[in-house]
Amino acid sequence: MNAIARIPDLQAGAAGFRDALRHLTGGVSVITAGTGADATGLTVTTAHSLSIEPAVMIISVNRKSSGYYAISRHRHFCVNVLADGQLEVAQNFSGVGGIKGGDRYKGQSWSTLYSGALALDGALANIDCEVTDLIDKYSHGLFLGEVRAVRVADARQPQLVYQHGSYGSYATA
Image 1 (tube, helix red, strand yellow):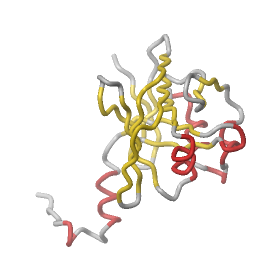
Image 2 (cartoon, rainbow, N blue to C red):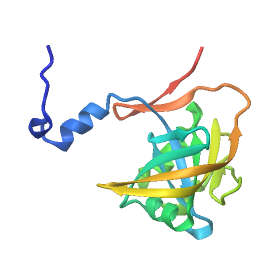
Image 3 (cartoon, helix red, strand yellow):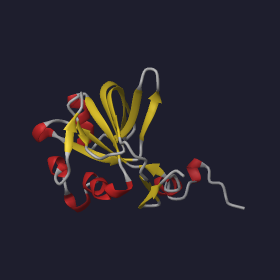
């Protein structure tokens, strides 16, 4: 039987909690925000619907990240749901190789839907949002965004997912 750790006794505190969370498989999305020279973004597994009516998305963003500041300033974001073949995009927006800001957009085709945030052409879905609320709590901000535009890919493709520090894919039958 596995031992149960109470939070005060959790192995190495945050490290034990992180280890537990690594078991969660998350769909990978790139969040884009800002315009022109102020365009930036980040890779997340924390983009979720909050409500269908009205259509509202919720994203969790580290308060120290450039994405947090861009979303706060521009009051918009676009959730770009990545397909299995878009690993390079995920890595660029996670800062692999030191890539920052607008350089994360290079090598891909982008469109503007409604809010001004950029939408990745060829993503499984683009969900363009205007920020309605921000809840700052602990290390992260929770941004609530009313959906203003949606673009969905025509064909079913496997989704890029992340678990245990590795990327993979998930396809429905």
